[in-house]
Image 1 (cartoon, rainbow, N blue to C red):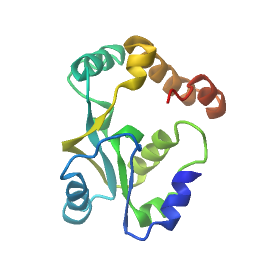
Image 2: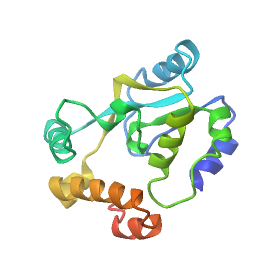
Image 3: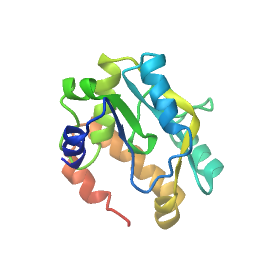
Image 4: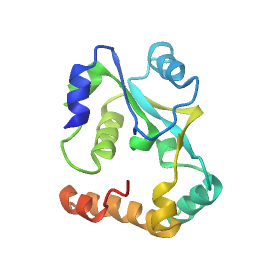
Length: 170
């Protein structure tokens, strides 16, 4: 609900959804503008990097998701909030914004955006994430939760039940 309200109030023609605790490096907004206005994309997201333990977390993700080559989900233009989703405001409105669900709203929007629009990934600069969940819950447990939540969501499990299980750790 908060994301949709913010989008409605926004006055610009490009929306950028990013987690409040992420670091947005210099050049990120210029890269978004280029993707939209020069490359003529409707939206997309960024590759990201963890501020600590990046190689360990990324390698673990590749192994646990059975990705043989060195790729990320965002390489396939499927984005989550930690990828910093950007989109033309007109496209956001046409897609009826985010579903008002407590979890997986970013994934759902990304899938709908990819299905009907031209989307791309910005590889540089990368958004910077803090690995607090990995540090608190453990690297393997965090990754297992992420994989399981996505699978259960795709099987039709209620986002409310998934959100109850995936507690906020702040």
